[in-house]
Length: 144
Image (cartoon, rainbow, N blue to C red; front, side, top):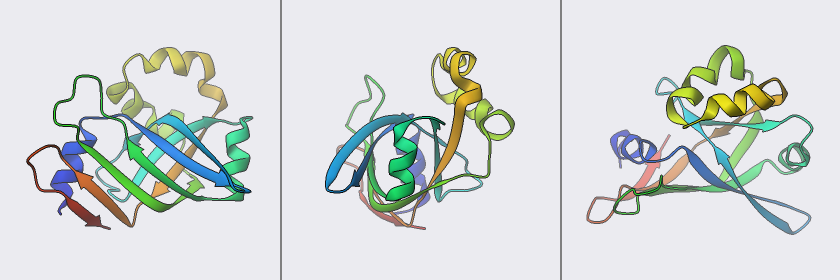
């Protein structure tokens, strides 16, 4: 699998179901994601700085995810990965990622206006991702 399949699936989604577990308590959250082609092995998401989720990410940074296709996307394209490391990012929403969020996530300006100053950026560092571009297309693992 090459990066083109990854890019094809990423173009069909702006969110993932992010799975975490601490003390044998599994949890899953839907989070908005953005991706920068210059850093193909990294997905970014944000969380509110006083959220309980931050403690979970710090306690057990080993997560799994699957993309959630945008409404109406034909063929059920997705990508998923296990044992991905989540960490706080050095990039910021205001200075680095906000234009991508505004471009790829409908109505994100409303979110930004309400809680933008409270957001902390996280990175998902990808090593291996299973990519399925949709029915009838080649699927497989992409290594970073």
